[in-house]
Length: 313
Image 1 (cartoon, helix red, strand yellow):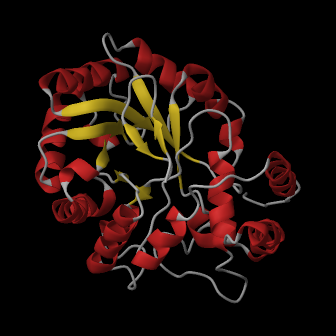
Image 2 (cartoon, rainbow, N blue to C red):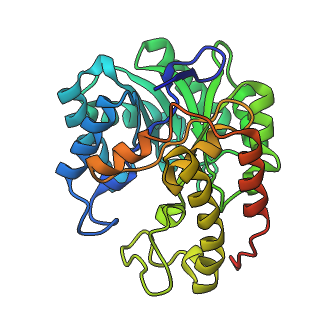
């Protein structure tokens, strides 16, 4: 496992992380259990993964509780812990209370990376005041670094402009070979400004692993309504998965591992955070690290993805 630094002065983390959205309860299906998620945490740790990402919004804090159990098993010093504050809690007067709740559920004294989960679409809370409140938490020693999630360039610039003594170290965004609109602006901005990018749903909820087709679709609450699961989109995606399979065969890697490695080869510091509900999934995800696609292979995969005609309306 190789390791990279997030931002200019951020933490050093494994080049692939572990996302724990699925540990939030039953929304991902009956086959997702706390014990399975804990097994994933243990296996990821064995393979050198240090970055674990969760959020107070995942299952009303249940994911944080599961991650907290995992941290107690593998040791706090072995984890770079990232969690997120919900948009409704980003009003300046709520920020510290939300942070304290996360600290309690996680069973830690300090959060390594504390992120705003989404820009606030409803209350329109002052982002400037929110960032000042986060900076106060940093000064108090409750958080080590500030991150954001799902921020466009305009949001990043406003947030960074409100900070005095620290900078944003990473932006967690939806990015995969099937969701590339972020490449137009935000990915380029982050690479230029030295802000790391943490792609969430980098396997597009299993589609890039080749798990689904028209006759086999997930029925859980999170995925069943996804436009990407339309029959026509699955047929298009299968063309890309076939390319991933061919390229992976040359390296002894699966389509999922190739899709993750493609992200890691993009400009700037890119650390995918795929989810895992079992030790075997965590092991496969970790296998995306420690090797590199060739430039020619990256171009071939990019061209195949660009050629897809997806209907997401």
